[in-house]
Image (cartoon, rainbow, N blue to C red; front, side, top):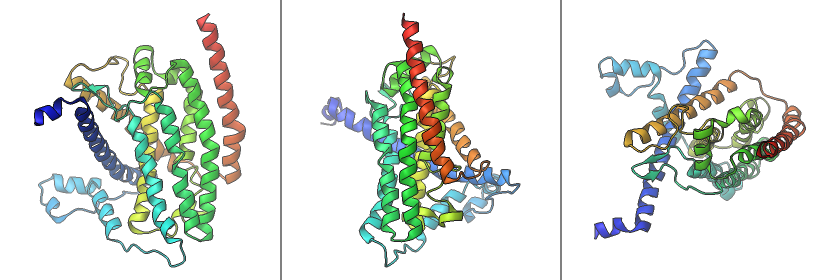
Length: 360
């Protein structure tokens, strides 16, 4: 009976899709936990501090040499942070709109994970494509899902029934709408060059012809800056802006509801880094190793290459946060509407003209 079940194509699809979902979720959660640690260590280095180096369970300290070493690196800090979020009091103020107040964190975090479904994080492994959903319109799916994330933030601001969260929610909605346009227009030029909306085929094109950042550097710059705005990262963290809005849309949140917003932000950062790797840096390909893997080792190497590129871009996210000051809100809007949208439109026109001349 088991053999008959596994020989069924539908059963195989469901089984392998489930395995890929579980693995991707586990990897992303691990990345989120240790991205926070890296951020704290990078900020400490920039500010001439040490960073977390004390937390460790008693049993871990008994491991010869490695226990103290891991403690000094802060490797146990993410576990302590996770326990702290789970054990803290989950306080809901009496004046909030309770149902929507509870719903907002889930609406905020779910889109960040759904965008990962179309990311090809490898070529093939054991005959299986290393992507959960290999859609022919992968980029359109991504933009459609990303646009849903703002609803959680706006709902959190409104449901908190307080002026600072409400202002943060309004800022988030205006900011995301503004920069989604520039981000969407920046990738139009990329797909004009490739001629396909399937993200796996975008990587295969780069494996044969070179990384798209060489062909579209302006599109990459626009996409990168727009991603900072979309993920509410400094210098575009105006929806939170502690110096002005206390904590913005999550001012009234505590415990796991606050942790969900935190998780959503870092998951969105991982998804954005992965998307930039796919669109501009050749995905799992390398200039000297760009063809699809035919062996298990080759497939694992492709996954390692993809994750390595993604980690580099995440470090860029973290570094920028601690090096640049926050923009004023009028500067944020001016950059999006009066600079990036015209630049992205001009890039589309120039790319189309160049392609037309080359085809002649």
